Image 1 (cartoon, rainbow, N blue to C red):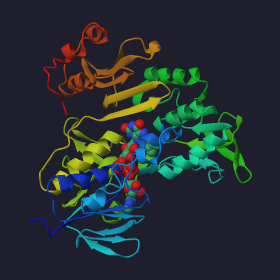
Image 2: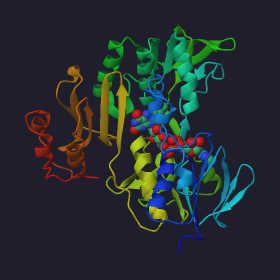
Image 3: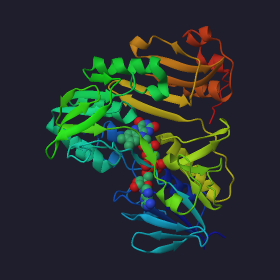
Image 4: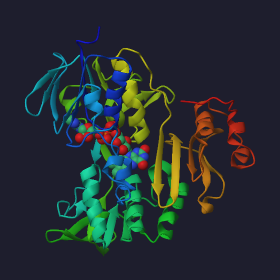
Length: 414
Ligand SMILES: Cc1cc2nc3c(=O)[nH]c(=O)nc-3n(C[C@H](O)[C@H](O)[C@H](O)COP(=O)(O)OP(=O)(O)OC[C@H]3O[C@@H](n4cnc5c(N)ncnc54)[C@H](O)[C@@H]3O)c2cc1C
């Protein structure tokens, strides 16, 4: 009998909401409490830098579930409430209004928050970050006003905001210390393709330079770069990465290292306490290592996997990392995980912006990115997941199907 048990989820975003849904789907008939610091019911963040930011879709499009879903499934959704402390010896969670809740299982889906730039002028009005739907609303109003925007950082958020701002007709300058955008994930060769996509759309790319200060009276008026330039601007968007929200776990004595450490069953160092989504640094059986993935699909799938483990189903989380990005008319999907690689092989001409890039270690694919090419995820997953030996020339040859290379026999890979 589970009906007298209480399962608590801290963090009411994608991972948390999908975990709550799964607990019910799997037949858990006890109490579910989903606690979220934001006032908004759980929503998805990818549109916040894309169509939602540009005003092309409304608020209803971003929510994970309909408004009535939580009540219909008897999920106690506590919004605008922060979990302050966790006592794992008495299995009690304390909220910001001093309410104490006892739990049988607890899931941390506290996500991540933007890294702040600790430089002079950081507190000026008009220096903005993008994580929440309110941030996106504020930024959208700035886009409506037009003018010149400086985007600091050419990672995913910076690149997508730059694209959306250009699509809305603003003057955009991107400042990035690396030599190309997205260099950390993709390397110089593929990053250069994204640099060209942005410059072709009229973005000024200042690469190989950092930001020294934001200058202005009350609001930011100029950005000073480390190579001595001063750029006039109406506002600034900073996208220099995120850090996992681990405060609650640290205070509770749960092991952390670049996120909350969890095993392949998403269990933390404390039995009965789990973590999933951006906050979790999870042991991945395929990579035989811990990886922390800051992407939508990971939150979407780890939440349900954690929920099943809260119900003692012992499910190992083994999905290959996957993410997507849309910039202008260029859509892409990236599968796998490459820390190092020997070379990149292209199938199709990158100049046409319709191609697949493969990152290889020796004769095996470790990651693949399809750009404006669709329905190739299954063979790419199989190439990576089954460690298929490949020949570079055949991999690059569009006349050899990926299915054939991956020996796909009609099945799919998780
Ligand atoms: C603008 C933007 C665009 C993105 N675009 C893409 C994309 O194109 N593709 C892609 O793959 N990924 C994208 N992502 C990443 C993706 O959105 C994240 O990976 C995903 O949101 C992670 O979900 P999560 O549930 O783990 O955590 P989060 O979404 O970070 O949510 C955590 C929640 O927990 C709450 N919380 C934290 N601590 C407490 C506490 N103590 N008590 C109560 N509540 C608490 C927070 O307020 C927050 O609501 C994007 C992210 C952003 C911000």
